Image (cartoon, rainbow, N blue to C red; front, side):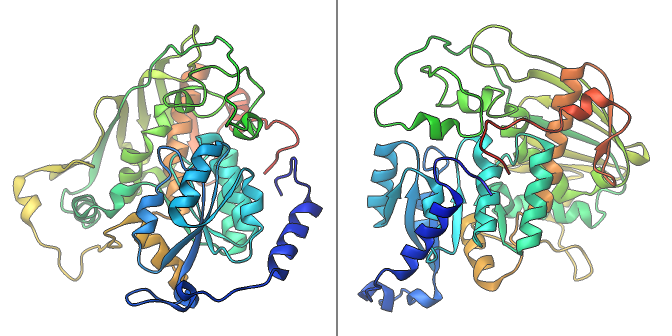
Length: 416
């Protein structure tokens, strides 16, 4: 279990106190016209309410009630707690100790995604986790294991799965409408360099030690705790390879299973800044050889996934889609074709999945698959040679240095 300023004993004492506190039945608990009673609602806690906090989306969900907010920024957590009529916490573990919360939304900086998600699953909470997943493959695999062990619902914040055109394009591909896949082309927005390294005082409203959490201690700078620093500092992320690449790579694994058919070899180049605060890979160019002779490329550019087959191609982005032949875009799916989960809202789909105890549209198994592709690209660039990933053993083949990069140290006493 994650431990730091609050001990395990303190965590359990807090949970017991919450359970023993008097419960007052209010009009909102009993329900109101058009609003289900509390017994039929999924109660939600929000951990991290910055740019991707999504609290407004959940406030609009049917059958959902937001009860609490945790964030190391005092003004941010208090404002969002007031918005939902809930309680504000500096330490997310106090929120997780509440027995009246069913699920959490994790929208922190990347380095906190998996540690908090794992703590939530162990606390018997379902979790909606923003992309990307972990800052290492070790974190990804640990997260999947814990959620399986505790039988918790997981939703990944790859919202394009709730877009009709993304689903239809993937259904057509999986139904064989472009024939056998021969090539995959993925593009995502590029990273960059720069960022101030000048130390400045920590803002009075920020618990900076909690913000850093398992990341190494570092001087506070103007660009460290705000985008793009939260994405472009290696201690907190692997950059847009995963931070933005999660979207088109998620479409890749939704549309095909070529990443699972056998070993994949990654060979790529990229730049890693040597000056300034930002130090994640940018200007990358990665070539991937998949089993069965399927070739894949991953480069900076727009935000799309192109599936090229023996009988045509389909390119999908969050903004729209295209195909050749054009008739693919107006073709109908039959009862014997592949039909994927229909979702009109990522947040509503999660709430519905929690209530029904079923899988969500963006499951953890797929999140691990797409995140691993990002990590393999990053590792191949950093070791400056080809590496081979075996999806069956979930290991890098015959390369000790590359294997060492599958995990990251965590600042004591934080663990997963």
